[in-house]
Image 1 (spheres, helix red, strand yellow):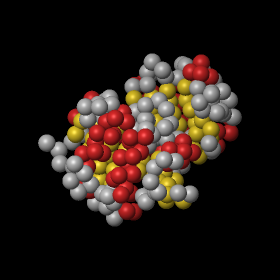
Image 2 (tube, one colour):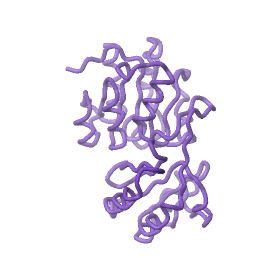
Image 3 (tube, helix red, strand yellow):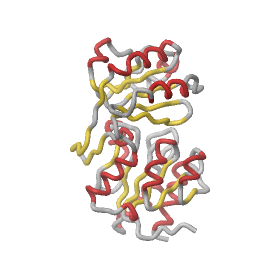
Length: 266
């Protein structure tokens, strides 16, 4: 039976873990995070999202006492200060990305606070209301820039395995490639994983890994769940994450997070 004693920091993934399709943390979950805060236990995020997609979630949570991890480990931010911000060049990726974009895969570049596709696809158009810029392809000069994140996505997962194999052939000098799920790949700067992000939090906050609990649902969460003193999978998690976790909640998404949080001071 998993022991939940000695936890000082809880780190949760957002999409598919804390949230399920919306951008509002439920009242009961927020109340539990407040209760833990009153017991001296900090709560933060480790997410593939970028800061402009994260900041709005803090509205009903306690005052921030620790940074959060964004961009799957490439960024660490505390209030308005970046403690880490890794960018990567796009040009070496160009032949592969253009090849798969021509096959109908949506390749999405982060440009400032917008997500913009390499080529316009039906799926990109369908997301324009949710993500401003998705109906406006990037310009040619994107290949001269450095960016924080690229998403590669197909709603049926077509071509993902072949694309990942070709991306990995570029090596790890500049990039980290990770599956988000069977339908998507995220490109981040070299050495950027949620584990490396949580390791940095551990160092910055002076909290040993044995006192950290990490909660997730997807392939990109496996590294931090393995690293943590207590690794938790919500019930909707992918099977490899469940196998890596110390505890698998019987509940999905936010209810699974709530279940795990209640056990910390049980």
